[in-house]
Length: 61
Picture 1: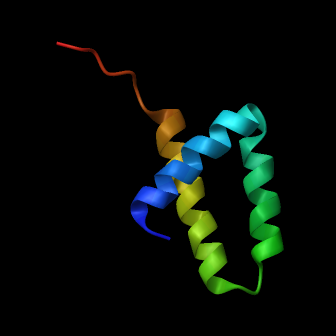
Picture 2: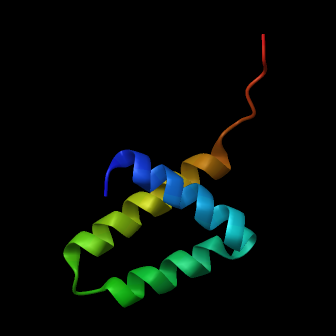
Picture 3: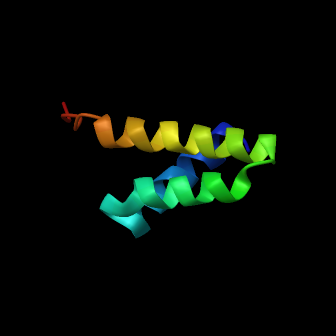
């Protein structure tokens, strides 16, 4: 999965699942066990979700 796809996926998951995003990602990672690439992709998506949630609003100048 390319970086752009990771961020798009993370934003879409947050939009749909909101506060339940963590549960959704855990379920997806559990289903992906045994598929190293899928687990790595979901780990990257989870990291992107964290970055989005932790981001501070930007002020326009």
